Image 1: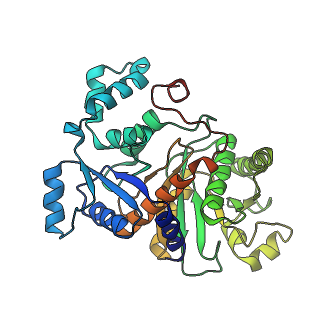
Image 2 (image 1 turned 135 degrees about the vertical axis):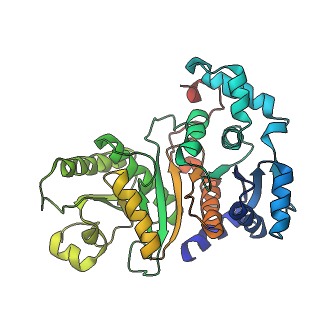
Image 3 (image 1 turned 90 degrees about the vertical axis):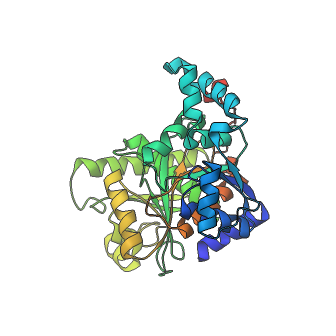
Length: 355
């Protein structure tokens, strides 16, 4: 709770509105109640009102000060459908299809965030990743600079010698299956930016491999080496202060004694607080291992590169995990522009968001 406690304190000073499309899920109801009780802002639950009230009553959860919206009978349904049709008609979407999509909570929630009726979105408790990401990519989309959309898991472990006093940022664990050199470099940079945004410390970014500094030969190692150099170059171009190093094995990245043996000149090895995986297989497996075997508090996946804050949580998340992710999404919304300082904001249907 050390890390998430600081996020909660920040959000208490700047409360935000977070929409939860899975309003009838007990874990989400519990997290929403806590979100309000901790004075983090206004939680918004989407779904059938009657069902949500019944489940809340069974759980003895008060819905006082929690907004509940049924997309199917919302007064915004027609407006949202028109906006979505304007966004997607060039892709062949029909008006009736746009209206039907807006009746679905993930689509309705994404449009609420895009239209500034909510500050962030948290979903995924009982939806596949594609069902969460598809509305976000169609409605909110990526930043105008066309950065790679990806995701990050934030791990908080008991051993404060690891990462940044026990906090590690791990990416990409949920979106890009096999990133190119360019994509891997952007994932490294945007994850470093998130780490700085939330921790206010210099990111030390390790791009991971099964090799350390040429100890093995494989085409995948060359990709990691090239991505490392490109990430450092991109950071320097925008005057972002961070250290990148790769390729590094994970023990060399995290354990000072091993780093001293394998790469003593590195400014990252032995003290990395950001871990970048070469592909989605390794990232997803590693993040779940850390959570299950290391008994870590896991917060994510926090989505990176989108025009608004959002997260796709694991279906195995508990109410505490969901609350933590919601707090992170809310904290991002406090000064989201600082993550992507060159970005410009636009509403759905306007040129910058409709490409």
